[in-house]
Structure formats: structure tokens, C-alpha cells
Image 1 (cartoon, rainbow, N blue to C red):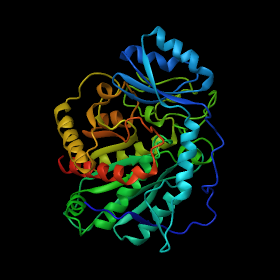
Image 2: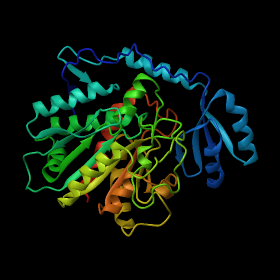
Image 3: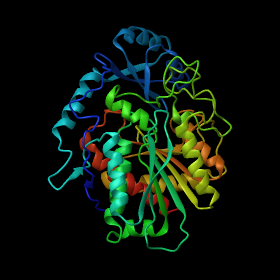
Image 4: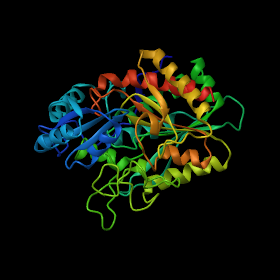
Length: 416
């Protein structure tokens, strides 16, 4: 399936960012370690002061280690019979390489189009969405809510003219965790793929004739903005509740399905998985809850996808515990369809299963909440890679990642 590799974009004057701007937070000497061992022992690493959890899988975890804490963590690992390898020996150097590459890549062609093989700041993504709605008659864009810092949460709705109405709907969101830059890039690529190829590509046409598609490219606008201005590795939103020591709530621990605040969350505002003072305490999760509830109430929300990185995994409920859902076999079947189609593009291998069994316990996720609401087909994808680059996935992998992801998504959704 061929998709256009350029995106039309309104010219944006006076952008807040240029590639000459560099986040003020630096990580000189910080390393990325992959730690392997028993699951229970790995869980204890989260309590080690100073380390930041990057990626997880069954039997391994990736942790960012500041230079002042390398000996402390090494001693902790030795006591718990855990081993480690160094994936990055200086994270700052990798970040600077990323910035250098982005600076060298053209962001716009003479015909006023931007390329999709680079990452773009929030303003450019928002401008693209507005131009898309202005240029494609069956695309609309609306703000579903405001963030803590007053930014809009823009959703693109694709209602192609073919097919029989009313069509069932599919929800796809990206960028809930700010540092996972590959995910907004993948959502934006998908919008371009669908709008440029409808009516000419048979797979795209069949997909849009069957479903209305709702895409939220940046679930966490404040956090994503912050990764460009201040801290490339920021994860959470930018809220600070009264009494909290630190900024930010992990939005993917803030959905309340009855298990909010359970396994895989933190009640420490400085923790990466801080679940907030209450379920749905955050404006961003409230907005998604209310909007998708409306779709569900109209009896046409068939599937709910949330796109993350990294680890190459395709997962479904539950995250809060080991219990299987009543729809385990169906969710496994559709996941298998998706990962098989995805692999057919660039031979990228994904593992699949429930969140709890595949990656780690995680309560308060959007997937568990959506499933509890009645949407059976709810899935989380963790995109490339397997840890070699982590959240700093090189821009030269954007196109391949997006191509395979959307091939897998469409195959899975068409198999529902």
C-alpha cells in the first residue's frame, strides 16, 4: 500500500520553536541500562532513587541511570541477582545526534509541503490538521477540550463519502506520553495516508467505506510541547495539583475503570507513573472520556486504539491484573491478524497478549477503561524499536514504522 510521503501544511510564521532551539534539560553522562532477571526483583528497581523507567517486558526493564547513581543501582542489582547491559553510554550524546539530524533534514519543500521523515513540533502538527480540514471535504477537525496550560486537543474526524451510513467508528490516539515522538508522527502519517489514497487504493477505500475514523494525534499537548522546549524525555502532562511536590500526572494511569491507583501506579507526584489525586483528575483524560463516551452512547464505537512506544507489542485488557477478559480469544485473534499484517511490510516482529502478561501490571489505563465501558476491541500498540534507541528513535525510521503500523491497524480493524 503506497502512501504519500509529504503533507500539505499551512505556512506557520513565528513558530515558538526552531531546530536551533534546544531543550534546557541535559543528560550528560546518563546511561540506559537493560536489566534482566525475575519479574518480582525487576519491580523493586522502581524504588531506587534517581532512576527513570523507560521500557518494560517480561523478564527485562530499561532504566535511565544518572552518573551519580550508577554505583547505587549496580549494588542493588547485585543484591537481587539481576544482570544488566548498557544500551546507551551517554543519552545526551544520542539526543544531540537526534537534534543534528533533524536540523539537517528539510521540513518543507518548495511547493510548501513538509516531509514526514522528520519530527515536527506541536504548532506544525496543529497547522496541518487545520489545513487538512480546509482541503478535504469529508474531514473535520474539532477541539474536544483544553489542557491545563490552555492548549486545544484537536481530533480529526474522517467520514468518507462511500459506504452505507451509519458507519461504525474507530478511535485512535497518539502521544499520551510526551517523549514518545514516533507516535504523533505515526498518527499524522496515517491521516495523510488515508486522505491521499481514498478512492485510489482499494485497501484504504474499503477501510474508510466501512468505518468513520477519529484520530487524536497528540493526546498530551502540554507535555509534547515541553519535550521540545525544556525536556526531551518528559513523560507526563504538566499539571501540578495542590500539595504535589512535582509537576505532571501519567495520563495513562488516570483513567478510572474501578482499578485506578492499583498495581503499576505511583502515588508520588514525582514518580513517572503518578496516577493523580483521583481518577479522571486530569483535563486531558476527562476530554477523551467524555468524547468517546458520546461515540459509545451513539452505539457506533467499535474499536479503541492507543499508540505508544516502545517495545514492539500489541496488547489488550487487562492491565490491572492477570485475569483474562471474557473476550480473550477474540482479542487474541484480532491481535494476531494485526501483527501478521504488520510484519508483512518490513518483517518487524511484535509480541501480543494482555497488557499484564505481555509487559507489566498497569492500572488506570485508557484501554482497561474503554473495555470496561463496553468497547470490546480495545488495544495498545507499543511501536519500534526493541530498545536500541528507545524514545530517541531515529527519524529515518518514521516512514517504515508508520507504514507497518497502519497496515496492521487496518487489517485488524477490518477483521473485527
